Structure formats: structure tokens, C-alpha cells
Length: 120
Image 1 (cartoon, rainbow, N blue to C red):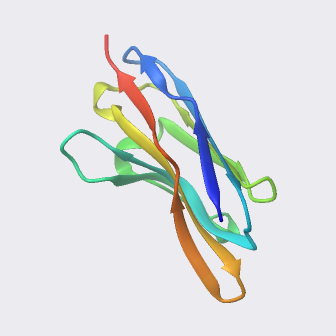
Image 2: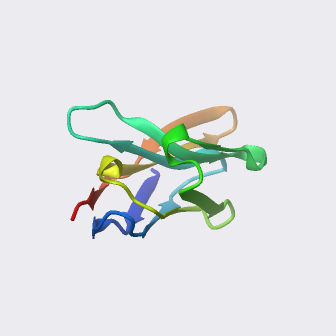
């Protein structure tokens, strides 16, 4: 089975920075896409940033210029550097991976989530 373990998160003042890390383990043939989603109270879970196969990177409009996703497919990791944080960035951040677990078989996995709170 595949597991995603997240670290980072916490409480930060507006304008501050945080870094989230995610490491995948288990039987993974290859990574199709791996990145971060978030869910604010009372809202739908939304994509924050993702790196797909081939190095394609996508960001939510609301975080462009402030957040940077990086990662290493060989190490199965994804980091999210979050700068100039705003109160509206508050939520639970989830690591997500779409991976090949066998020839022709892809599956999606979620981490347990880590809380990010931006407040003065």
C-alpha cells in the first residue's frame, strides 16, 4: 500500500512563511502527479499546486507568486513553500498523489492533512 506522510504547518501571522513537506512510501512504479490540496472550513477541497509527469506545474490563481512547489520524483517527495501568507490561506492542507502501482494501474492517495492557520 502507498502512504503519504506530511510535515510542517502550524500557526503563522499574516505575511509570514511556512513550508510543508510530503513523502510517499510503498509500492510505487511511477508518479503521474503529486501535489497539495487544501480545505477551508465550510468550503470544498481545492487544488493548491501540483507537479505532474514531465515537470508540468500548476498553481491555483490565488497562490501564484506566493507559493512554490518543488519535489523529487526519485525520492517521492513534494515540498510547498508558502510565503506572504494571508488569513484566507487558512485550512487543512492535504498531500495528494496519483501514481502507477502496477503496469496499467493507477491509483490516488491522500495524506492525513496538516493544519495551516494564518492569524494575528
